[in-house]
Image (cartoon, rainbow, N blue to C red; front, top):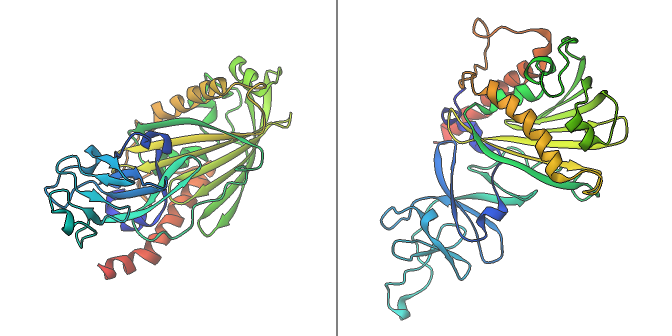
Length: 337
């Protein structure tokens, strides 16, 4: 599956940028091979448009904010959040006002400290994470480009068989390579995987878990939201809840913007955010190193292409569900074109 050749993927929400990045001005972002400008209007609401001025094609991401609008850096044409040209500075004062000229705009929302964008009418709403607003703190961790397909990262997130090997220097236990058993509950937009995984508890993790034992057990509930969003809630024996939200926003066919933040039910005094990020940094770097060696073109029909083992069940289910979604919705999209 090549994301830019899969029209259905335009009908999902993706986090494209931390809101804080937009405070001083608009920023560019490439989503599914399409160049966008992301910005905030005068009310602090997110906006997303094609990154091309309709006048002389300058990138609007090189523009600036003025009176709650986005001004092109070339000739100062001003745009509203829906892409409409609201002011042409070169016109006489008595001819100023909204025009019929515009650039394409897209749905944009702010949620969980990030701007989310959908290029076409989304199939499903933005997910509601139960931790938000329930006394959990949210820690922003990573916003970085990985040279791998989003589906590879999602499969890896639900793969109990890779811990002993990919994470052998952090928490994996090579002495017990057998993958933990799991249960799966299917949902219309993805699934929930429930599992318990015994792991090593290295010194850096002891610090952020406030646990002195050399081993522990992760009680995990992993929710996959199609196509490339995962929330993994890990419960530890001492009552700590560590929920990792990871999204692989598709930049193009071979690269993804990895957005990750966590929810925790402890405090900064109990575990410093910097230490939490430092441990998760080790784990994600281990994943990144191996995932960037994989083929970005993930076959949804694996027959004769990629072999499987029983622990691959979540990944195989992802591929089958995406294939069903494409079969059900993509013909209608193509007909509309």
